[in-house]
Length: 295
Image (tube, rainbow, N blue to C red; front, side, top):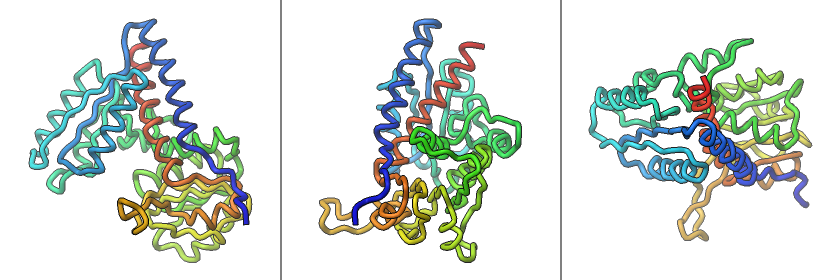
């Protein structure tokens, strides 16, 4: 049976957004002789964090955003990490800052993130930003990048959210919770499914929009999807694949082959939500710079 779903090309949409950002950065420089600055603090040498940071660096260079990066050793003290955060808070050329997570076990993540000045919180995880996201009639300075990217994919694919039934699978602070709040802000009727939900299969079957962020490989089966639904798959899971040189391949939280026969729209993994996260980070850094420079 042929694929029924339109595959949403996150790579192409992210490229389009980067192109728009590059134009706005150029305009900002021509008018104010300043460019946005994005700082990244990375602690330790986790391969995934390192590769993500190098992708960010490349993306910044591509759109004309200035990078400020600092690599700190694994054994650094919490106080020293906080001191670096304060340095970037005080630097007027830095308009956005993020601390790459996870941090080593001996460092309290919440404590470090709370030290980031809210005007530079491009990850959107400061309690005041999340608090405003949760409140009616309030707008956070920044929305978290991956959830913002999910909604951008829906909007640029012409998928309306207002009045639709949306089911978010997963309730993490990074994706599940904020994406549910963004969907509520966009007037969807939202249900969050998690590890203690009973009958999650039937709840997911009622959804016009499914945002899958459970972190479990291919947990959501094709026959759980309502015909014509939009499926945004945030999951990135490595599964063994002896036919690949690496010995593994990446899959989402949704069984793509099964779901794409039923859904109206679906994002692939890789090439769906992933590229959008960095595009939204660049957008947040630009917005932070505009607020500061054009005050």
